[in-house]
Length: 228
Image 1: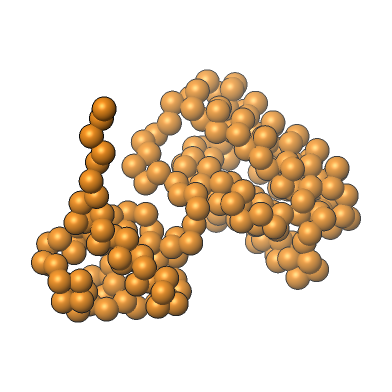
Image 2: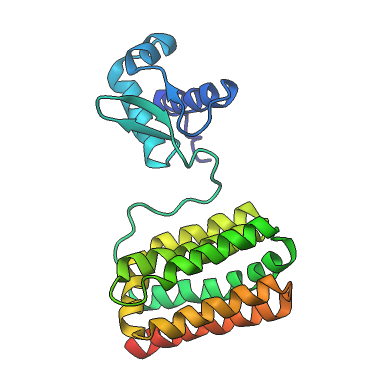
């Protein structure tokens, strides 16, 4: 019979810190007590406390700002987190990630067509207008606008977990996505495909939105396959 692993002091302290954040009603960006105050509150040494804080910072639950203090992190409520230690991916892994996007994102585009409000659609069009301003020689800004479009489309589907999955996948292979932009070397075509997806969402045509997103991502996957 295997021995049950007992929680360490750091484990218990990490959980107590999360309880402090939740029960105190703290939101992302709120400042937390200082390390000295927390050490006294939990009756632990500063090194033990810092170990727990490093764990929480690694998951985005808190943010430690040098010379400023400890703050609730933006990712405190996330269910899906990207791996911060991910190295550059092998080609097979990248194709699998793109395959995952092809499975996930088209149905989310259909859901966005059904659920997006007028304000949502205006925001999505603003993202594409921003992308349109960077089609000539501003690849960093264009890449950011393109990724924002995919993230926003997933968010408008109304399922926060699936939105986080898409966000994590895009975060994992952001550098590779920038390379795709260089290899694809047809920024206008990429922009036009995004615009076609938006138009289907605006028309509340769920089937068309899904099909256009699938076709767009398949184009991206084909570029990677040819590169490999």
